[in-house]
Length: 303
Ligand code: NAD
Image (cartoon, rainbow, N blue to C red; front, top):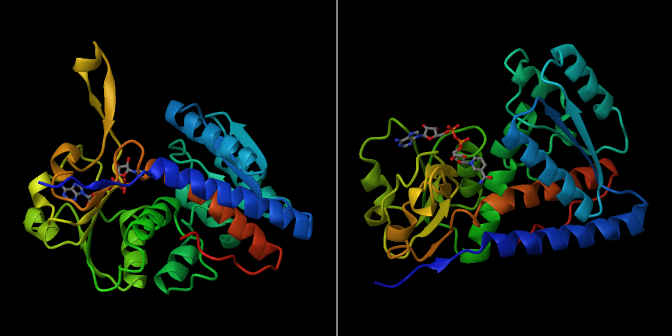
């Protein structure tokens, strides 16, 4: 059995970051402005702290103006809304990201809806959801993980997406639904599978492109994959790894990689596939947001 080509998300994300850094330098020379990103973290969730640190450091490395607001767990909803409003009105800030999840006493959707759609670099505001679904890509800001998955697909398949059967497993607002929308815009024939889908293996077997965004370790088996299909594994699952020592763990995707690699034509690994693309696309969105707010045209897409 032939082995799939491994899609190197780490290398592709690095090339995207380099491109963003050089576009940001050109923007500074052209307009005197740096893309400005504000990231808000409420509380002490350790995973969120790592994500926020990485976003801040990557923004700095791309030459952006980067601001981090770290607020205590006890922050009131009113205070958080006030901060978002201040950032909405700050001309040096072009992108606002509120790290999720928020503490239980804060209404997440109220906070996300207050962010000005043109500064909503996560792409979660209903206005951006609508623009994406309407195909208005010159105005929309697209959620980072599906946008990054799309870059990986285009770098792998070039202009061969049109007419392909794509199956997205998972229907979340953050990944599954926007991913399906992006694939549809590329003229794929799109199926969205989810927890109530009947006979998932046979649905997946019909797919030329499989995007797995479920959150169940190695759920998609190798013999579900059509020979030669392209597999994008969005899942990030931590499982026990006693072979590495007591109490150790490791990350796996939603696809049984060791099996699927013998069936697929190309596949993303976990870690090192979609994961690194998410932050790279946050930088891309911040740059796009900055250009639009400065009255400049969007640059060429990143693929
Ligand atoms: P979610 O829990 O919001 O959605 C999961 C989806 O999977 C649901 O729509 C559900 O219908 C579907 N599902 C659940 N069980 C199923 C089953 N047995 N068969 C078919 N479908 C099933 O999750 P999410 O936020 O979309 O994230 C999905 C995965 O992607 C998680 O592992 C998450 O950690 C990962 N993720 C990775 C990144 C990244 O940067 N790479 C970003 C976001 C999410």
